[in-house]
Length: 164
Image 1 (cartoon, rainbow, N blue to C red):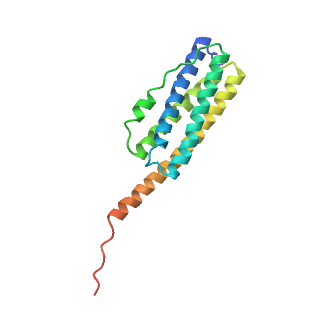
Image 2 (tube, helix red, strand yellow; image 1 turned 90 degrees about the horizontal axis):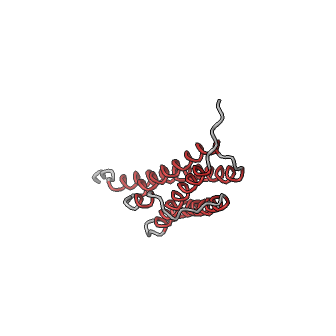
């Protein structure tokens, strides 16, 4: 197995800023969704935890960028704009999971190319938080699907036998 080529400083800064923009988009999106009246406690609490992870990740990425003497991006990733068009919780949670998985994969690909041990530790922890949030969203998706099935059944009750 060959040794991965270490990232140049320019690649490292671009990578951290890409993640920062994605995490910022995730934090904004989750904040929007959590504030909706339709977000019941069963959805609000786990999404609030995920939103806090995204915000904490933003802070960590800014710290890494500043430690590298780089300017943190002020942009927000396109995820936030695309998420605004989603109406159902099933659509939203699926989209969120795809975004979480995208970040997790990018970090996994980058870790062997990083020289800085602090950055490796921070990004490995960020990767794990994304894995955990994917698991939470999977459970929420199953719950939403189950609730949708129960609602469909309640809309189509079994016919009553006529009383004799």
